[in-house]
Length: 95
Image (cartoon, rainbow, N blue to C red; front, side, top):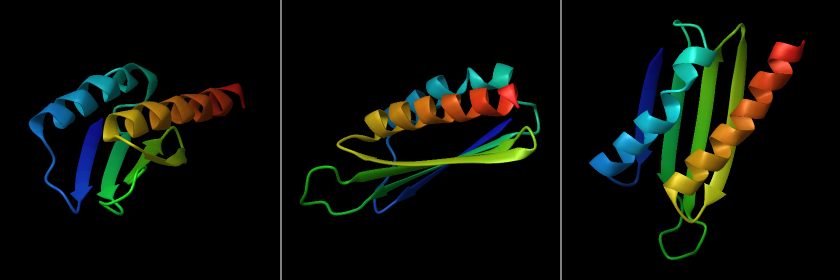
């Protein structure tokens, strides 16, 4: 499983990279080894609240799962996005 991280309009901090690695590690058990997780983080408007946009795309299990969240922090966006991905994985397994 590969995890690709992309930061747009800012430099990603090492602390955020470690946070992403920690949160995505559990998907090694849920997804096949050929699965790919792409996380794209963008600062939309620096002068406003809710200016951090997080997009998570997972290719695996014969399907593509995608979620987009806009929050105050990237950590919050990652947490909420991965919760939504979990629901998508459960629906896919039920089929």
